[in-house]
Image: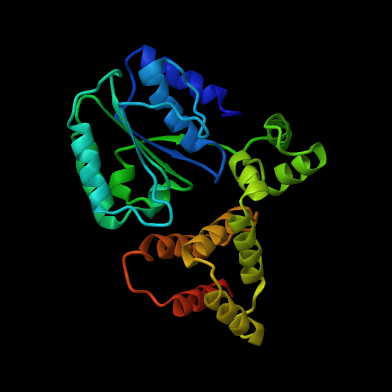
Length: 280
């Protein structure tokens, strides 16, 4: 957890003064530490330690982490949250729920969360983690305290990668620059072969022209390969977010498609062709 000392100090103060709100949304670029800080906050509330290590995560009795993986977040997850929050805390003053990639929540799930946010249990703390709060329904967003996480200076990311002990200085500098100050993304770009493959495919997709014959061949090869469409869409979201001339309409379309893909019998070829048409 690097680069967010100001946010950590602010939350320490809120907790010490008894001013912690019941619900927040942590938003900002992919891989800057939003999820880690949310989990670190839960750890702090229970153990007074504001650290979180995914390799050796602490066992907390008052934390429920909702992680969609390659699936959307549906109403069943909200029922789980409601049951969890109805119970009294064990060691902490709060029962904390962290909803990672909350943009993947179905509309039904978001509306159910809205009811919890409107009348939260006294000991409830819910943190939604997303790249863009506009991906959530306005009625839910209006109930949440917003905390923005900016990208980090490339120098800090480089130093962190070297400190992790897995990247040489020259490669660390390259990863820090290409990840645009997003340490988590930089590490994944170094270690996650599946992500690296999908990022390359996403770059190719974004260069395609709608009427070119090569676009049909690309889509055909992509869909006949072992690439999971959901992960490919994740890679598209990352690549677009790294573009200074980002096409926000296309970005929102991909996020919506990513969220709905597990809920509806969508035709991948038609959906990707539609994105290609919108891109151009």
